[in-house]
Length: 316
Length: 316
Image (cartoon, rainbow over all chains, first blue to last red; front, side, top):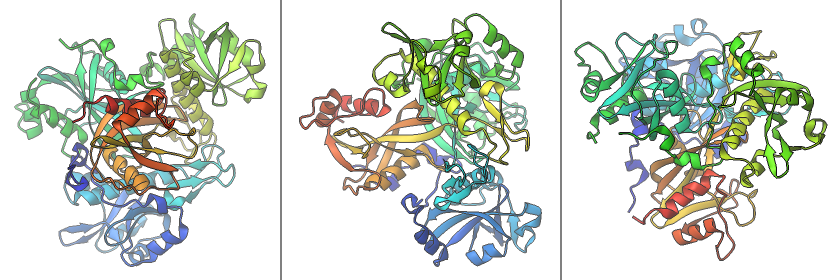
């Protein structure tokens, strides 16, 4: 007998923002009466953003990102509200405030604004709340960047409970955007390829990554990115996991890539450095025990899990 | 010793538009002098679109989608030109004509306009040319739909050889869009789940599919779509292949999904029908030999390859 779905933990669910327990109610988004009733019903709550930062209520050591409708009203004028879904308590909405952070509810007693990366790295919220906040952030960012129709330039309006924008002028319909990114660990026997961008914390190395382009497969994007950034030719590519990455709205597609060559030619515009690391060294980097103080990304990042997967593989 | 990359055939490369041999020259796109020289050098050629349909030159039984710069000039005014990449002969560009098909070069002697689906289904061009046309179509469609800045409504301008649009007013930079779609075959032992949309040819059944949304992993999108469309709960999800799908610009992510339940509750808005098929029946549908005349998608579609993969698996 097959396992019940709730018994399965995907590698994807181990990544930051990878767990989201909301029922998205996709089939109800166009039912205005339903959405209005859900928003007015007991249990309705809002995840609230000022710019791209969520607001949270501090209660002792606990942070709570949910605001009741009357609490939302106290935080300032709302620019857009979207339906995120429903949990056991009721409807969950994402709301973007009009005012920038300094003028918004942040100043109110017990309300803090804290970016979604910090909330995840410091483990300040349980995974399903981080997942719901990631969904809200990507969707609200899309609205903020798409107030005008890209086809004709006229102001567009929110539709389908926040899952579409319609142009009253040219009648174009626009849908939320998610950008696929390939992120891959090239491996050659007992070594793996890691690189560092200049913006990384000192000593940190990670898997190479780049946006998948129109007309590419996952495998061809992996091969192109590694060829461009490190001059390495890739054979087989293996999918491992995906991660919703709300900065602002990517789908990270994590892979292992079998290197067919090993002579590096590093693109010094994209990378400060890239080199081969042994399995032992990579293990030490993940554990924070590398002798030269080199490190790997935090468990928030899919790169951490890709590297860990390879480190824990039996050498083949 | 690992295989050389050119020895590897991914499942993704078996799908329509899945092969593209152009060197995309991503690092050269911002080098205006380089791009201008490439466009003027011998061997430079254009893939030319009128609306979303490519133009081709008919030479006897052969169709050729490449036009030399002076031939492009004879087809009509050009609205946008993008750099697609380079092959052994020289630079390859994608150019969109100003005029609609009826007024464009289509009428000229020996020039035909033929949609990219027909070209693929009928096998009228080799796979690498179909891949290059798919890349061009998605990129040019994006330009056609994004002539205005979605952040402020001002007209935007092509930049980075067609891989960005810049807003002179608010300084926003916009990048080409690719929409991830999950397409999955739910399987329960010796049966698989196929559905049909009303727009399908009579008797054709295919894998279920839907757009991946902001905040989802591949696995969670697969589970949501199958729950919404067929009421089935899914356990493990297995990646099989991706396909660039230029209608207009999707990345199809193909999976096998292990069903944890089998009682169907079909969404009759999305689907005309959905049901379980035996492996024997699915094999007959792929071969065009189903006793009731039911059929599966053509090899152009990733759904064909997902179904074929499962049919050819040893029953486990």
